[in-house]
Length: 597
Image (cartoon, rainbow, N blue to C red; front, side, top):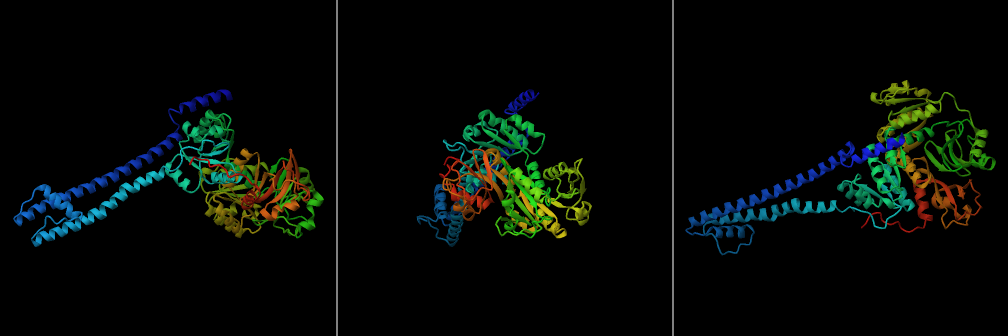
């Protein structure tokens, strides 16, 4: 059946070459609309130039006629060519003086012609030329400055089909890793703008096979299709025909589109709403109880565990001795949104949340020693009933945790999930959702301003509740933390980490927005040296939590052991610390430009 479905899908998409899909038609109509707009602008400019030329001819005709009449009043007669000659030499201020008036009326007329000509020819015409000829020519030249193809020797590059927050984060990861990338943009103006901003960009239509050949897709390491579901289907099908072996990671908004995009040729289809929802739910479940796993590197698990209700409250990490007794490593400590790298004198409060690293056995040992049975009637409020909010609700339902979604739009209400319809900024609506009994509040709207507003409001109403918020733009992450969020995640962070991990084999675990656990090869500078000698944390701000060699991972390695030259390091650090590590230790050649100069 799948084979038949695949064959049918191929036939449908093949027909789409001659009769484009509705989405492709919309793209082409947009392009045609832009082209029609540029044509209308050129016609407007041409009409303006023609109008100025007609005004000039009319002025010459009028002044030549008046010249004839005034000369006849003085008793002199000149031919019409001579009249035009006198008018033009006077208007252009040349004034040879071979023909002059003797009467006052004639001389006044000469001054009028002189001033009118100077104004028109020396001011209006140059302005018109600059405005309607020179500037449009320069603008058209600038529009076409973005490249139409990549460098001829480019290989192992990443091709992006959009440049939103997720793609910008992917481009930054690629730059840090020394991997060339290129963004294919259909609109020439958008491509020029991105080119000016330093983005590696190439102009081309995504449904045109020639575009992908100019992008050297057959030599690419990965193609990221992150547009609409129909467009991603067309991209996957087009690319797969040209490059059968390239990795294609596509996004999907609708669950029904996943199979279609996979049949079209995508290697992996990612639903970013589901990913973000699962990540936000993972930052909420079991906190204050047993440790909860939020990511893994092979046998190394990354987990969070609340301190409240345990003997760890009001002790330092040195006094707790968790690594010596249980083998588990303390990566860092969260406290009301503030993250600090673990140190011996870090003091734990009842609001602290430990970020742990260890094997399954080590985490089990931690649970046996400090696991506190969490309440069986945990309740969460989810503000926003979109894809992310519904994904969180499903994760809570699978974990047996009750939840309610607050949603203003009635058409977003789905069966099987408890909803409260209304504005989350209304205290009565929050009370209906169970604010007083809530253990967590998750804020998932698309608007960062609203998220900051609701985070601050909910923190004021419930100082003790755990708040996990969503951010659309990275610059608002710190604001959300200051507003009272305990954890902040975004599409850009979770989406780029998820897509990058498909490319680099689970290289990154996003702990929170701006904080990652990541894997990298042991830099040559550190090979054979111990962590105590390397001072990685002091030099970069990153903390080494594990060393992997030949598939064997050692969590919380001995600081005096030599680092293997053929091994990998697993580190935790902020985005800035990760960039500092890359700059400090990764001595690589400057990556080639993705586009041809």
